[in-house]
Length: 415
Image 1 (cartoon, rainbow, N blue to C red):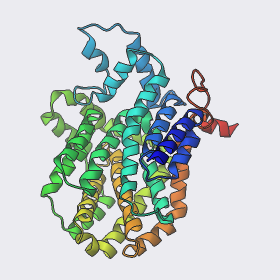
Image 2: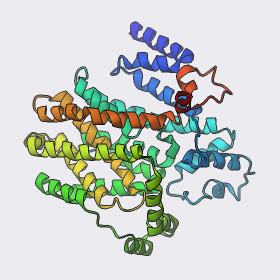
Image 3: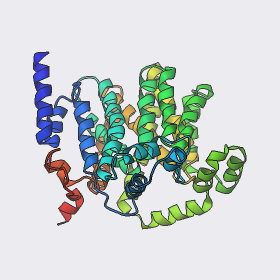
Image 4: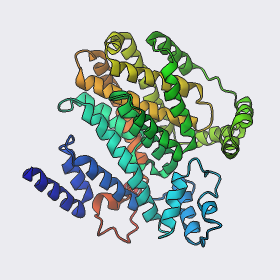
């Protein structure tokens, strides 16, 4: 006990000198109780040094919104209107705008705002990653490290650039992981349902979980449905928008008009054409490897999965999410929900190759074969992260970084 206390004191003292070195030392005991909090603290440190590299990124809009709110006088009559005055805000998903509003009462500093964003996002991110690690038995094998790198980078901590949606994603997973891999308790569903407070669209995955209770658990039916949904796209936007506008509550009409819209879809397609090739390629990598891994699990391991209630529940839910997400992927921005499914799928693969390697030998071999291409995914994700990771996050500490602007790691490498 005393030894653990000394190690903890040393790691936290070192954090004040070099957060990155402190994190690396803590990660050596990746199953210890200390490491997830050190990771959380490091993400907060990253947030305070967040680099806004482009005026068109969401983060720049958040920063401008903070300045506007800070310079606006607050009274009883305009209190609610202030933090719910843009097109993205409503009484349903008020958590993000309310967070910005609360920070604006004290400062207009973007560093403070993204530090708070990182504190909220980082809590759920660190808990989700180490929940999966906590289910892994024994020391991690090489194959498990390969898959873990994908799990950590599917929704990485630099996703605070899109704070509302990606924090909702981590909050949803925070409830869904124990619901699938421990016990189907109502409290975990309620936690996942709270993701709606950050982004209204999370009513979709919450509904999928609820309706899954009455849907088939026949793996053959689910796998065939998965293949069909993978190959075809069914949604016509205009009829869907008219249907939803007719029955949805009034406060959702603005959002539906924005997102379920053919013009908006066309704009996204045009933007995608100018998107750098590696951004599109990395998404296709985990998508098609997901197809391969699910197929291996179905054809070679379905009997083993059927005989384990927890594994059966988790695998069925992954298939449910895959089918629904593939079908509705043509709705603008809804394709992002696939990342929730990828997180669950690759976490499932990690636990299978780590905890029962002999039974899942072909799954293990497929991971090794896929490793070179998966490494490309890791490299591309890190490149995206280097656009917002300040060089001071790597070389500095909480004392040296106060009032310092620094530059993005990517810009540092380009010099």
